[in-house]
Length: 244
Image (cartoon, rainbow, N blue to C red; front, side, top):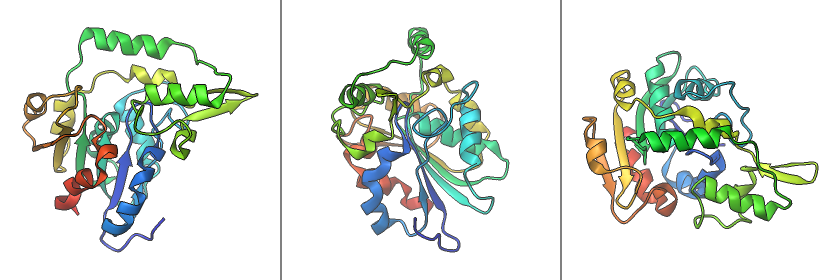
């Protein structure tokens, strides 16, 4: 990891539900070229190599992220979906973490009772086991919403899997699905950091109108979907230029 330059913020990349920090690995060459300071892409609690929590909340996940930062770090957060909410919770935390700005990409702003019930059902399911890595990898890509963006044999998929006694499972703790719907208005009111909300033009999970209702700047990325950060990393990285 590059040495942080004095005064340069740390870029904190936070993944979405079901994914891991390795989802940002395709960004490495671009960041080497366009980001002069350090960047971090941790696994959120209950994902990848990060231990689970007894109970999941956005604040609890943000606390786990905060413990991986140095007190002196100034942070610019780019969070996708769940990671965007965690970034806002980190900025609202006001306890030893200096957040300069948050860019939230593809945050689902409105949840129906049926969607919350479905998330609760997923959280209550036991861990599924698979006989082969390929089967587990394909399930991982579906659960994380990354199907079609990474092939099953991609190295970034490995972080989302775990092998135990010859069987395979997803590394994610299913209970993380129970984190619930974010109170975005409260999170935004609790932070003084600049916030930008963004979405891909074809993202089915959130609309421009839903994001604009929060009274913060909103950017729509033409031609992109929910995983805009993987479809066009340069376009998403450009959203951070104002905050460097």
